[in-house]
Structure formats: C-alpha cells, structure tokens
Length: 623
Image 1 (cartoon, rainbow, N blue to C red):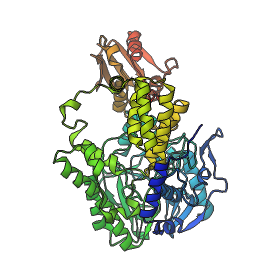
Image 2: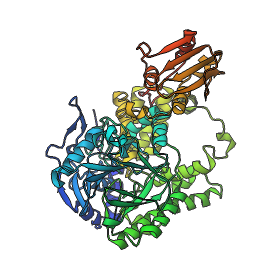
Image 3: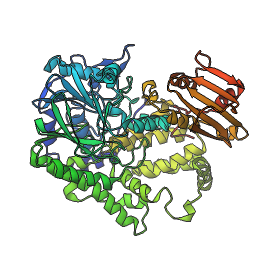
C-alpha cells in the first residue's frame, strides 16, 4: 500500500513536543524493566490450525528515537508497552506482559498458582502460563480471578483452566458480581458493530511499523485467537469481603461502574500487594471507548480511588494492574492513585462547570486544559482515552447527543447532508481543491471535514478518496493517542484498499453459550427486521428441554417479546429443543436434528424469516 512521509506541519508539531514534554523522566523505563526473568523462545503464538494469533516480535522496530511519522510521546508509550516476557513483581507475584493487549498475573499460593486475568485468547493465555512455569516450576493452577467484565480479562480462560475443574470445585474462579451478564450483553447485543469498530480502534489488521500500527496505548493490540469463558464459581459482592484461595487471603473492594460495569480491586496481605484492575493504569483511560460502550462515570471512578487509598494505602508496598507495569513503594503508589483520581475528577468537575455555562461538549473539549502538575506526569496522557473524547463523553452522559441548539435537533443524515454541502460549495471537484489547499497549509482537520462530505456525496470520486486517505494518514502520524492513530490509519487503509472486516470476533461461541434464555430472546429481538415483521402476528411456545424452562414468544407490531410461562396449548406452534440447539439455529443451522415442533411449523419459519443479523464488514469511512 502506498504511504506518504509526514508533511512539514506534522514534523514541526513533533519537534515542539520533543522540546516541551518531560523526556528526561525515565522512571517508567526502570519500572517496566524491573524483575525481568525471560521471554518466549519463539515469540510467535499460533492456534491449532497454525494461524498466527500474536507476535510480539512484530514490534521490534520500536527502538531508539521516534521517527517523524509517530508522535514522540506515543512512540515512548508503545516502546514501554511492547516489552514482553515474565516479570517478578515481588517474590511470589509475577506478570506475563506484552503477550496480548492485557497483562496476566500470577499469585503463588501454598500448593500452586492463582491466575489473574487470563488475556483475550486461549492460545496467548496458555503461552503465558507456560512461560511462567518455565521460570517458576510446573505449579498447578489452583485459582483464577477475573478483575472485571471486559473480554481481555477473561477470554483466555480455557487456556488456563478447564470448565470441568472449575465446575467440580477443584479450581475456584472469582469475579465481581454480575460479570457474566455484563460480559455477554456487551459482546452480543451490540457486539457486531462494536467488534467492527474495535478493528479500527486497535488496528489489528494494520501493518506494523513507523508508518503503520505502533500500539494502542493501553497495550499493543488485540490477539486474534479463540476467546471463551469459564463461568465464575464465586461472585464477590461486598467491599471488605475476604476470600482465601490456596492459602492466600484476598481482601476486595467493589468498584462497579468505573472502567467496567462489574469490577473490583483487591489487596493480597501476604505480599503487601494491591491489584487495581484497570482503574489505575499508566495512561488516561476511556470514559467512552471509540469502539462504543456505555458511558462510564468519572465521578464514581474518582470516588473508588479515594476509597482505595483509605482502605489499602497504609498496607501495600507495591501496586499492579491488568495493563502496564507495577508501581513500587508505599508513598509512590498512594501518590499515583491520587494523581489518577484527580485526573478523572478534574475532567468531570470542569466539564460540568463549563456545561452549566452553556458550552457544548465540542466547545468544552476544544479548549480544555489539564493542570500543569497533572500534565507533567506521563501516566495522565491520552494514549488510549483522550481529554477530547472523554470530555464529550461526560457531556453525553449528562445531556445526551443534543446540544440544545434547535438547528441541530433535526439535521440531515450524513450522506444527505454531504450532498447538500458539496452542491453549495460548487461540486466535488471544488471541494477537493479546497481540501488540497487546507492539506498543504497543514489544516488537516478542515481537509478531513471537507473530504468526508466529498466522499459521502460521491464515494467513487478517485481524487477525493486519495486525498482523504492522505489526510487521515497525516492525522494518524500526528496523534499522541494510539487509538486515534489506529482509527485514522484504518480509515486510510479502507479508502485505499477496501474494507478489512472485523479482525477479532468478540461474540465467540463459548461466550454466546453463557447467555441466559432471557438474554437469548433479547438478542433475537434485536435482529428482528421491524418493517418486514409489521404484519406478522405470531405466538410460539418455546420449551428449553435441557433447562426445564418454557417461554411464550410473541411477535406483533415488529416487536418480539418472551415471557416465561408453561405451554398453554393456544400457541400456533410449540417448539421443543435444548438451549445449544436454539443457539445453533440462530447461527443459521436450521436443518440439524434436535428440534420438535407441534402445531404449525410455518410459524417458526416465518419468525426466522424476518431475522436480520448484523454485518461485520459494514463501511465506516464511506456511505
């Protein structure tokens, strides 16, 4: 694929960053290298079919000074995040870092090892466990902990623990209350769109290199192996709850509604170690991820960090998290938790202050300045989240998408709006001329806005597409935020080469299998093509034979509703099948045995005929 060198405006901006940012502060490098024991002899991790699911050596180019095609601050962060291998946190606690987007931790107990957050894919988790055993002996896994409900913290569970061992009680699996429900809802309800956008956010399909993907701030990118889940055997519900696993006492603090809807922190008194899950990492996190999610609450996030200092600050000598490297020393860790607390609280409070003066989210974000004392700390920089999109998320959380200006209450949708703008400006060629002038002047934001309209008005206009790709590429080169860079470069790639689809599918069969019957029917309802179903009036009794549960499923007015009740004999059809067979049917297997239908079989066919599954390859930068 053709790539351009950075334009002078980007090179000049990077020179300013080099002169003003605290590059003489190298503490993070000392911490990231501390306790290194070794890494994989063969860094390439493959699945059973031989496909590469993770290759940390693809980031070996991250060395030396930043090239002008990468923001020097992001280059620094990616250099740190790309370090891979097994590290000793303290004697008895170890971390496998750089083997997936997240970090997998190991807590040694009396007879074995407790695994914390087993990455995204079973292949990367198995490789991390093998690396631990290579250096610490062939200890059995005697417990597993999920700190929160995001895929990169439980997806690799089957590479570490079998479902049978967990179900039999041989390996306890601990999680915060509600983790499974939140995990499956996030990855299934809006999973198709979210996973497609995650392909942009993490840049998993982009080429690695100084002019390509260099990382995502929180970690490098997502592995592309096979995710699954081992259902927790114990849900922690209360702050102060203590659980002993393999002789190791764990003291928990609940932190729901922070970085994830279900999340906790915990202290390990034996090692005077504090795990802060994903709420204290070495960057500004997201309040609304670019892939999409529910807006997080920075105020409650800050509250739980204040509480963590009070609960654990005088008992911990090291702090580790589910991403990045640890922080050693009681004073340092308390100070850093406080800095992170102030970061989220300042964003929240100052956004609300300006919101109440009538400023919109975009207006607040444009001129929002962080306190210099926070800005000087590398771990507050927006490598993953950003001040810009976090401020807009806070505005959205409190006031929604509408900024109160009636002219913006009912605008045309993007394509219709683009056609009108382009016509008003004088046609696509004129728009491209204006965009080229803006590009050459270094006003890349205006060039991108013009070209967005040009491409939505005429998707086949070659000059508009080419210049739009060049513009997005330059915006990527200039971004300090890893996910912004990935979005820009992914857009450029699609304009030049076409859609690359969805590299990592989050709605894995093993995860979908954890849906409750109620969630299955919710997921079906989401796929009903409403207009096609307007005239249908269906009532079916669905009997889940393996669960001994029955539901009356109705489809009227294009709305599917499921109510648990015994079959009453007045349905058009009674469908009896096991839950796995229902899931297979919804995945497209209509002909396999295992389905018994009494009554009008065509009623089921009519229901299935109006289901409209999502498209994992939908366009993003063109209509």
